[in-house]
Amino acid sequence: MLEPLPEPPLHARAEPPMLTSAGLILFAKVVVPAASFAIVYVLGLTRGVEPVGQFNTAMAVLSLFQIFGGLGLDSYLTRETAQDPRTARDLFLRTARLVLAVSLVSMAAAVALTLLIGYDRTIVLATAVGSLSLAPFALLPLLDAVFIGLHRPRTVARVALGENVIRLCLSLLVIWLRPHVVLLLLAHSLGKAAGLLFYWIPLGKLPRARSRLESASALFRTVLPFVGILLCYAVFWRLDVLLLSRLRGYHDAGLYSMGQKVVMVFYLVPASLVLATLPKLAAAFISDRDAFGALYRRTLSWLCFYVIPITIILVFRGQDLFALLGLGDRWTSSGKAVTILALLIPLMSFIEVSFRTMLAAGLERSALGVALRSALACMIILTPATYRYGWVGTAWAVVGAAAFDLAQDLWYVRRFVSGIAQVCARAALAACALAGLMRLIVDYPLVIFLLVSGAAHLALSCAVGLVKPRDLSNLLMRRRKTEVQLLPRE
Image (cartoon, rainbow, N blue to C red; front, side):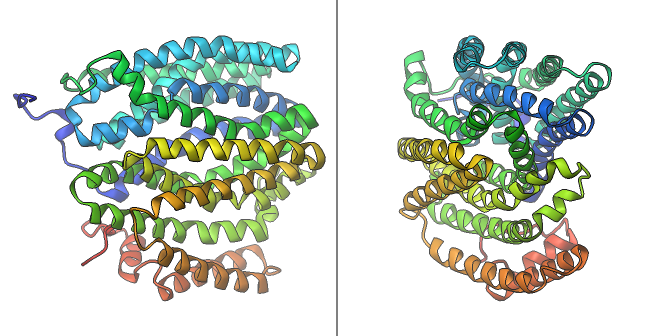
């Protein structure tokens, strides 16, 4: 047994409220795509569509191998750290050795892939420079996962802010002085390296207790399902831009990816809420299965409350909202892409909470089966859709593949969490009523449309029981002493 520590460790500090944790994680997640969007926005505004397509193509290649580098162990580290915080440092160091070895291989593989596909010299060179970021990019999510599991989201937020301020400043300097995709990828690599350095001090202060993994073979057996999941979802979520740029050119890839980035901004809130919930799910699965199921249902309800109005507004008025960015007529198709890709917001949100719930429950092998089937389905429908219909086919194919993935996740989760059908029924009722109302006022001025839609959504959500009026009041009034309860009141 582990001996008691001589003094309270850093992880033993008071656990922040759920919404505080979600807010800090949201901040950490917002600054990353916000910086990325700012870079792409300024690049597109000053240099046109072609440079954006080149930059996003190189980033799509790198993102494929960035996911490989982390081996998908973020959920594993959060789960294990939440269940035994004293072993956090040892778990990270053990997994980091494996991750670094994979990152070195990924650096060479990323460049080899661009040569194999036949990209031009600019993309090959940009990918080679950007591959320098693969090692820090692989380690940063693992460190985020450790400190989220330790209920220290403030550390995660500070590191994310410092890293992305550096990356944004360097990138904007490049665009101003000498806009070139290779130099932009160099700025990206330097920013990621800075983020790794920011974690050095807090990591060194963690306790040094050993984990249950006694050998390298035990670690390998543990991480193998996570690696498989990672590979499958890397194909699932990254294939669209790669295929589009290859089959239809950088112009179509630039239009599609700009709309995609706008939609992904709205996904940050549900992703942050789920990450804040994951440590509690992992602990509740061991100590209280009823609380485990209740936490899933309440998280699902709040996700529905958020995604319903956002999705419907973007479907009806996404082009008008995109036009507010002021990019000009050449980006009109990106606004149309927003109206289709908006359907990914609820799908990805529900996938996130259901998939993370499966991992918290230790169902890695079942999750691997889901990921494998989803990746195969994505490849089957995405290639012909992209070839025949361009970015429109790509968008609808990705939406269809995500719906198939969600159906599988819910099939597994319903086996150990009851009451999912009731939550979904309330959400569907609220969504249908809101969509009917918004269809009637779709031609109203945008401000009036948004105000009426927001007020109607609040009333409908309370009327159908999707959220409780008291919890909603506490959330809107920001009462610090009465946190919104994610567990239902008995």
